[in-house]
Length: 407
Image (cartoon, rainbow, N blue to C red):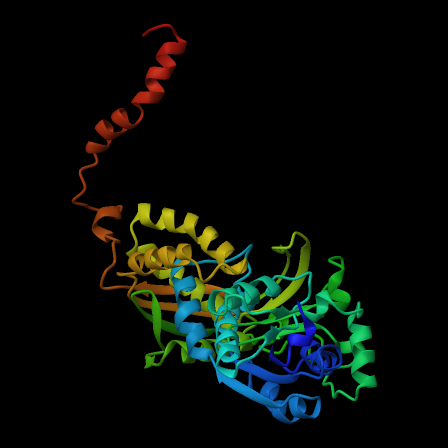
């Protein structure tokens, strides 16, 4: 990359530690280039967006552009993944869900602004560098990409804080509380510090650790009932109140968080090859996945359901590995939508101290027939099973006869 040719840079900006120090670093190392900071509102909350413009300008940006991408993320990425029941090693893909729409928007703005390069704050160890850069390649092919973590001499978060203090960059964190976090409407992740050792128990009950809810130990002693309505696999109402999908997630975050739902502590396999330990909060998403799968049990036929469970692994890998803007994604999403044509109905759940307990499911398209499965009188002719078993087991019988020399 010819640094002398870089005069205007669009930076994917969150206002966190990484992107805060990147602005002055870019100006120092790229000809005092103009920095346009772009912040994506993906539902992380007003507290993370408040004061962002002032901070960006004070640290050297020429302007801040804030983009509301919440419904794009939910409608274009989260809902298809929900319909597919896609998860990556039990992780509900919270960070991965946001990256395609953010990367696309960053690329579009860079082209509109006539930028010479795009910069991001992803480390050279993580998955997000791949997710962002593949999205940028799809929508701004040939655009130079600057990843300071792959260039600079800073080697740790402590050194980043040193740099921030030396350049008078205001920070909301301290060295003792500088977990690496990512938050959006769907989830909150926690990495780093004591969590880097899998032998350490996460301090879930410590004041301020969890942000989207409470530990199951701190949840109420009485259960909370909730009903969720789906139409063709998409959630459309909570407790009888119609609302758009993003508001469903907000409501379920509130109910799930209060009851200690959706907290997982896992060591996952990163795309780059290393294992990584993280604690994730996904209260509303965990409820939605549970409810959706429960409704599928009575509305989706066996063969489709089993194939979908296999494809869900591929779909989750695709999302996790940054391959969202691909023909394969389009094909699998079409399958997710088609297989959910009849996933319409209502699911009732009981939330209690981190547990989700089924409390009833109904659908106008149910494949469940009480008349067929009842232990009482039934229209099913049980004598037909003998002929079926004889045909079904014929290969096994023939093999046995061969071994006995009776063929």
